[in-house]
Image (tube, rainbow, N blue to C red; front, side):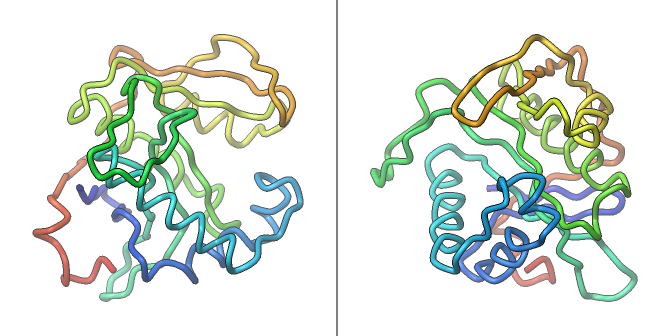
Length: 204
């Protein structure tokens, strides 16, 4: 597992101690209305989501990073998460399980209202996409966005995703975007660390 660092952000894999952070994020009215279809989660649902995030990392070598904004002190302000998820992957409890299609990867971003509109999603998104191409060697990354989610549409264009068509599913119409190594916008000053070598230095 890896930690990503950009000029303003620290992105680290999720841990068991993130339950309250994740519950607070998914309970943010901005997130509830924009992403969760008005559904406020229970603490048990947040716990289950965190377990899924951690399992995805264990089985696929990548997943959703918890995003923290740097400041001048030691504290890191939690902004949300951004990362890569296998589409339609069954997260088996088998530790030897590996995703069947490493190129069927979706970029997902979820930020608190206080972190939105500040370029944090763009900065984090560029970092995780560059990681996907440089370290995972995938051929493309996919993004799905609601047609009315103008903020996400603009963000993904700034990352380098381009529109390829609409997809209709259980949750309605989504616009499908893709990004390749040729179209991706490089992350400024991206640093990548091994997670095990960085524990205990203030990223938790």
